Image (tube, rainbow, N blue to C red; front, side):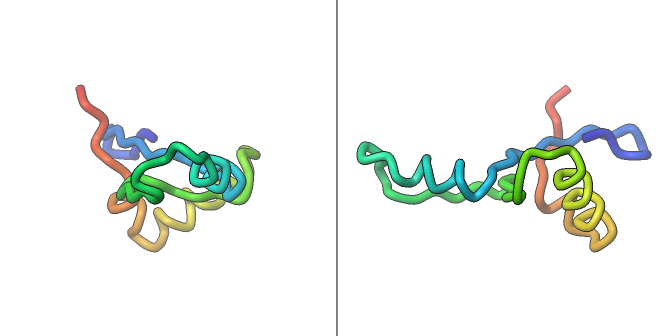
Length: 71
């Protein structure tokens, strides 16, 4: 993501299905995960992703839901 001030940040986007697939693997250990920069979206459709990112931005949550992009 590129913000209006020129700063760049990133997040990991998962759909519920992808999250379920990853957590359903029999070899996952530990059987869970936590990532601050994880955003779950309904689908990978551009409109869904843009809507989620815009709402998070409007609610001042996008910085918390992302990480600084290393230069």
